[in-house]
Image 1 (cartoon, rainbow, N blue to C red):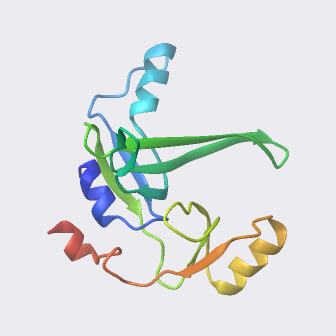
Image 2: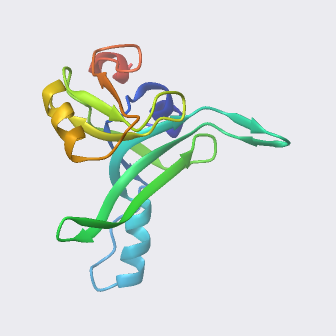
Image 3: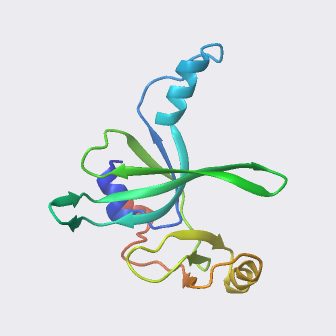
Length: 157
């Protein structure tokens, strides 16, 4: 699926993988393998941003994927995010997993610039997660089948 279809159809909270279509190089080619991994990976869709105009600059439609966290002993020291421009992205995307109906998405704030911080199994798990993590302006949103979350048949069409 193209980047524009991810932007239009895939619900926030889905796990999305992307690929450039090239075969994985052998493990012994460390630099080639590292470059390949940046173009072939997966992560959770956390934000969609429509076109924005600021002064003379127009930022195109884009979406952001949380690829992973790096750290140790429960302390995250680096978060890896990838932002894809809908109009200029030549990668191929696929949905690995959609958020389950009945789960709860936790956003860092309300509004258009909100970013997903966690997906909980249910509302009580979401409220329990919020007691352990500091997000004073967090917004909880139940996952339901909506226009943004089409069924598998609609996505395949």
